[in-house]
Amino acid sequence: MIWPTSPLFYSVAILAIVMVGLAKGGFAGLGAAAMPMLALVMDPLQAAAMMLPILIAQDVISVWSFRRDYDAETLWLMIPGGIAGVGLGWFFSASVDADAVRGLVGGIAVVFGGYRLLQMRGLGLKSSRPLSRWWACFWGGVSGFTSHVAHAGGPPFQVWALTRNFPHLIFIGTSSIFFAALNVIKVPAYFALGQFHRETLMLTAAFMPLAILSTMAGVKLVRRIDPAKFQTIISVLMIVVGAELLRVAFT
Image 1 (cartoon, rainbow, N blue to C red):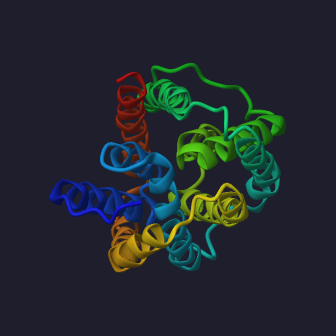
Image 2: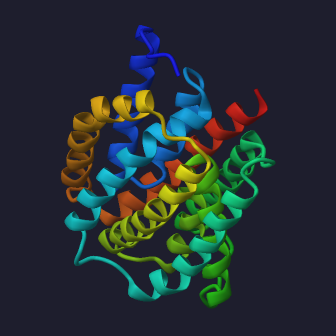
């Protein structure tokens, strides 16, 4: 890998890392657009490797900030599926088309985000009972797979978590712990695939202060948001991110 010198690269990378920081601070789903953005200015595999240590550092801040706000049952149900999904992503890493994964995640995000907005306005179908626990394991697996391949595990996680109608801090804390676990599990897979290089890790170190500051900013901002508005914001972000993923996948 050649050390980048283009101003365009740094502009895009800074924006992507700030978006991920805000996502880790509580604006869940926003970070899914970061990888497609980075893929426009650098090799996607190296972008994923550069971002993984940044994501883990941000996870530490996020988990600590929301350590008292989480739903244990959701974690017990989703993390085993998430681990299996990461394993599948590792196993199929040589043959999986990242754009196909982005397209799938984008489609899920747009459809589900739109449906949630309709529900919140009394226009969606009302479910008489919560989704089966098996769906938690399934969506955890989808999230683990898309997280490994494209760091895009947020929308599948939200398909389950948003239907539980958690208070917004519980939603954020549960999401933080879930993705912290997945990102740590991804480290040996990335090493095995040879994705970490000296230049990549140097870029990680250069962007790390910005990553930490943006995550702390997200934590402060999200605590000031009304819970009802938070649900709307997350649903809108799902649609916007999904549309961006679809655009990148098809272009």
